[in-house]
Image (cartoon, rainbow, N blue to C red; front, side, top):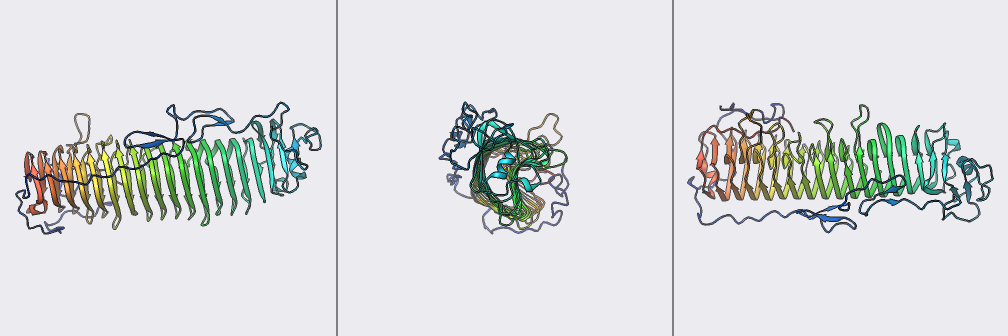
Length: 617
């Protein structure tokens, strides 16, 4: 059955301009070549193949796996589940203690002996010496002088309660314990376990726990907080909250069990500064790390964030996010099971990512579950990234954002998303991208949207449960994909597509082999086809130095004022070389030094079905 002469199913009328009209079209170049397959029949194409992503050499402690080579931050046995007081950091062999246990006397083995050191043992009634300790941490804070050290014994201690008149006001204080043996819990009247007002406060070698509020509140301007070997085991709403111009330096820190709608493990608003090395964040009802503010900045290294869940009506379950013009740099980062976005930049935020692994983005519905996302004038610069099973796309840029991608590997992103890489009303570039087992390679959509794409490989693409997707490159709604060295092998529906007025694909050194029809259970609800390169509804495809071979139905399809220009290459071993559903189409645009070889028929004007594409992008 012939479809309507206007493109159905592919995109809704609201998304796609262009439609029925006369046979007029613009042709990319006037080849002046006959339509009988002119060119040297003995000369096959000599294509410059795409370079594969270069994710090696691996960072220290990471191991090389697979082909193309990528880097796994965990040993072959995988990421370990560690008991309290221990952590498996990125790039290490397994669980390790955050700090040394207490000595036989219950004090840290490295407790200082200098005068002015205050000792606290829960329940004691002394005056602060090691042999006659205080009983409450809040009393030690009240007695502490500048640069004082407060030493906590093993056991459970009460934190620094609100109001802030009794919180850490002197600053330049160090509070230390002995890891999992020393636990500080929220006071009955406290909103946070520690409330830091000013100065520089160092907290190290202890565990913080709260069932009534956050773990650490440092929302006062110009506060400096240093954490070393600290475990936050449970908090409400916020694990660590930073305010205007506050700074956090964290080394070997773990945070888990943060609860409450829109909770955040580490939150910085009002232009704070974050520096995080070796952290593990897991089991959070919300977001791992978030920073905002025009002068806000975060540097996050050797950090793992996983097992994030949605709480209540919130939609925020993101591993890391930057917004309101702040900047975030992440290096050697692993994320797993985020139910919203993994790395998210929006509202003018800038995300720079290097050596990142993203696994198992689990979308609760068809609107969520993306790997890297830039939205609303954000900037995303990512290199050496490996994404596995991101249900709604590995990378997405939209609404005025700019994206720059280098050395990207995407595996197994099959879901409702139209492609692994999606750029809509944004722009940017991508180099050395490898996509396999996804429901599409790249889609670029929006009037004036341009993506420069070089060294792109897509292998084993698959349609989703609705029999749509599986294409290699798709330009829609006026988008433009341009570049060189593209390879699409074993795709579905179409290798390359341009659909809609002003939509264009322009490529050099292009190989499309083995595009098949989408899989479906019998009887199929559609009549599936497999097309190499298609130009539909005023779309334009321009390819030079090309090979299109072994497609299920046709190497080329032209429909509803679409236009295809081919220069130098071969169309071989397809049932149909070119299916042309435009009356009076000039076949010379397909035959400029292009060999047609081994096809069932070189040219065909039958009403062949069209590739199936998603209804929206």
